[in-house]
Structure formats: C-alpha cells, structure tokens
Length: 281
Image (cartoon, rainbow, N blue to C red; front, side, top):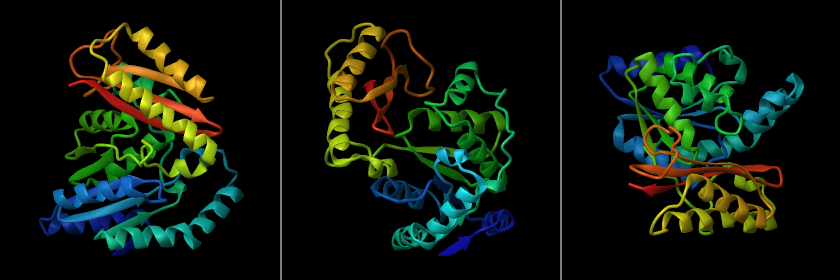
C-alpha cells in the first residue's frame, strides 16, 4: 500500500493509473476508521481498479493555533495514523493520502451552486465550508473516476454532486448508505467523544427518526420538526436542525411528498452528531 504525502505525488499517482487505462475510486475521510469506512472501502473496491483513501482532519482544527495544529499532526502521525494504515491495508486499499491542511486553497467560492446549496455551504451546522473547499481542490487535482462518500452527512454528498456537475468534472459521486452500530447510532469517529450517558441518550435520535419514518401519514413539516425537537430535548440534547428535504437534491420541502428525507444534526454535550432517514421513496 502506497503512502502519499504531497500534492505532486498524488497527481502523479492518479495520472499514472489513467495512463494505464485503470479506474480510481477515492474516499475522503478524517481518519479514525470504523465500520462505516469499511463499507465505503468495500463499495470503492467493487467499483474501481484501484482505491485511495485521503485523510484530512475534523473541521474544528481551523480553531487551532499553528503550534496546536502541528502538535495535533505529530500526535496523529505517531499513533492513530498507524492503526488507520493497518485498517486500510487489511481491506485491500491501494494507497493512502495524508497531507496537512496548508496544502489546500481556502479561498474557493461557490457562486455556481443553486441558492439552496449555497445556503447549505454557508450554514455552519449543515456543511463545513472549509471541508468543502478542501474536497473541491482535491477533486480538481486528483480527478478520480469515482468519489465514494457516506450518506451519514446528508447535505455533504449532495453538495459534492452539485459542485462536480457545476465544474463539469468527469467524476461520479457514489453514495453509500450509512452504517449503524447496535444502538442505532451511525458509525462516526465523533461517537468516541460521547460519555457513556451521552451515548445512551443520543440513541433516542434514531429511535425518533425511525418512528417518524413509520407513520402512516405525515402532518405538516412544522409538526414533524417540533416532534423531533421535543424528543431530543427530553433526552437532554440540543437539536440544531431537523430538515425535511428532497432525497436526491437536498432542496428544502414545505410538505412531505415524492422522495423525501428527514435530516438532523444534534448535540449531546460538546459532540455534534448527524443522522437521517427516508420518509418516502
């Protein structure tokens, strides 16, 4: 398994595969791998000749000072990065790319996206603009055949597709259904930040979403949102949003109809969690 640590090396790797007529599937991640990542790797390997996993880091690192960020990188490279490599190698990944944050241009604008997608990008709780900027430049430079992304972060994958379409890049964004742990929580590295009590209470979120998805008929969007908010509040969590939207595009809906999903972000303690369910197919 090849380890890539510079942009030039990444471009050479991708171009070399193209010169050989081979396809490449990329998976963008924050590291700290779990069963959700295993599902992405499985889909990527089924789609393409070669699979690469790229590792960035949590959006919160933008709040770090230069020294704190350097310390974070050094600690990651000495500890978690080693287990991440083992995780990928055991699943047949061909390459891992790990480059520091300074590699990417942070001035990317998204005027080309539809208004509702621009609003999503500019909403801190729905998408992290910095993450989207990094991903956009990664796709421009690497141009894999496929980009494989999980459906846990509902809006992110739809923003990805909008950007690829607007830039006319020859990349297919492949969505992979989220994978849940035994208590219903989607697998996420953020789950490790929850205390035992917070995790128990956070399991209420999926139970509530699943309950709503099984209703025989749907009331107004406002009633749905209030219902979710009350259950999250009763579990001592904070609901940051509950959106009823078009499953394919992420466009907000005023009523349930057609292909509809319910997407939420909640916070328990200091930890933000994303989840979503399909209401109608």
